[in-house]
Image 1 (tube, one colour):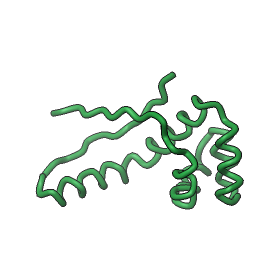
Image 2: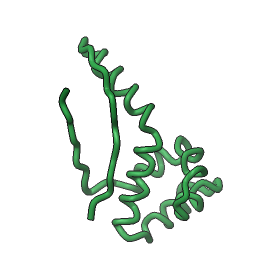
Image 3: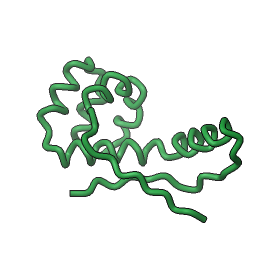
Image 4: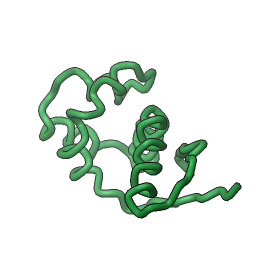
Length: 101
């Protein structure tokens, strides 16, 4: 088994909101994170951007990590499909994210 870790920094949260907010609203609604609940109420992407821009970086990272973990199964399936598209057989057994200071 191989453990692959990817560390992300300088994430363009504005672009992520534009592209992903409609896709993750359901996951946000099930969150206990107050910001996630606020973003899930059907507001426009421009309003969501304003809220996210006002958050400290650590809170943005926590929210992103929560969304990654909430979409764990889909991400694992997508990684396997990507490998398969390159004719590589692999079973992805875990995907996860942790916001670090």
